[in-house]
Length: 267
Image 1 (tube, rainbow, N blue to C red):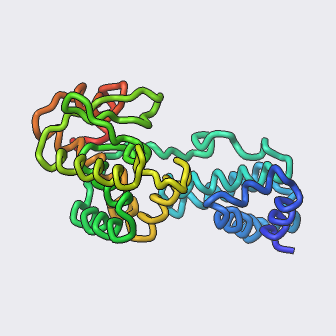
Image 2 (image 1 turned 30 degrees about the vertical axis):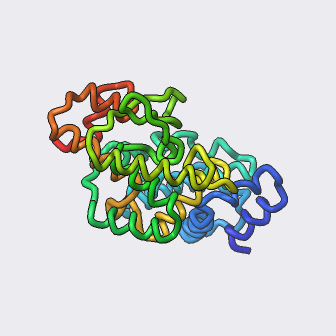
């Protein structure tokens, strides 16, 4: 029996482990099993050892895969190890496997605004709340979660909710486009009888998932620089070009450390 089928059988019997099959990297679990079987000829997944997992990762790194893809294989390997009750055969951290996502995550993104605007137009056709959230991300540099929750205005500033750490922050409303957008957001909320952009039949997590799926299906990805976070990078870069100090940019983005701005601004 193929290793991947053995793993799936174990996951199916183990109620706790079976939750792992819901992960988006379910395909990576299968591919990792195939790689182990091809490289070592392993016949029973319970015989999997540290030397097998490390050997596969060395091969994967030689293929020149991105850090994020390698990290997804790391998650898959840990899922397999947990399923066979041999957690120690896979290091808990990706760093121990020689994987670092910092190169992907902390690199400034040059957003494809033409693609983002086209994507926003398609989101509006799908549902107004999706389009409004996309515009909030572009016009105020919001995170995905913040774009669904941040609708309040006070003293000429947008009150940002859903921030990391749970602390609301304020972003100045600087131009006509921002004001008109917030007026349209308020009109939408009044019509729908809501206080956030999350549809009344969804909770926050469902709204985030719906938003993420819609963007992905329409082609908004990290590969083409039209991912939701791309708009946030473009916003930070605009603030920098306008002469704003790094400390002010960091605060407006909701970061506590000024040095984080270097992850948004190209050198």
